[in-house]
Length: 262
Image 1: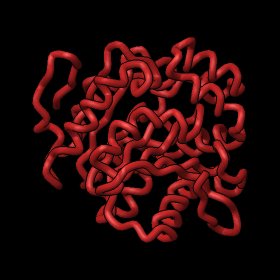
Image 2 (image 1 turned 180 degrees about the vertical axis):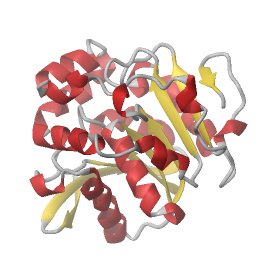
Image 3 (image 1 turned 45 degrees about the horizontal axis):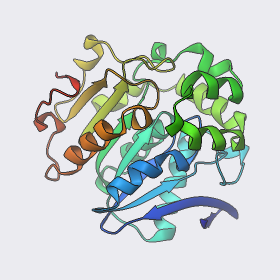
């Protein structure tokens, strides 16, 4: 287990591979661990990091650090402590919101960002996500997919106050407005059958800037990286392979996934 200390408390992370730094940020259910298959695939070309956010996994439980801003500040402190410069980020759910917060404050530090299951509008969030306990969330969002065992086993470590605080915080944030002001190349991924975060409608996608793009995974729920890992990894590699600053709308269409284009 690898750790750094921020404000006197432990931040847990894991790292694989060599190359340019690529960060993975987990969602509301689970921890860094469900990223392992994606990290292993990406570690052939990248130095991959997965961090447990405040209140999740083996990172400290700090109730004063559960806002989206404070979770984003965790990334600031972590990169500072590790001496890491420019990065790419892959975020999921909560991690996607944290990634967006971080890149808005540090646009020159992030080369590109891939946001999975981000609720672009407030009504996209199912109310059950805000009210259910962790056991119910696990059954609801993970089902019986064997690949989800890592997230299922790690979920009980989470402080539910961290889940609820972040969701309450999101009710006060206009994520779509932030996205329209984003200058970093951004790829959105949504599961068509995601019960927690509804895939965006066309009128929402029409507001995306030219350097943003959205992909809908028809066979996925809330965890497309676990439901359709080969497809998810191929898309990630295509995105990472773009020249720096190049729009993800330049990604070629492929029959194996459905893509919404502006």
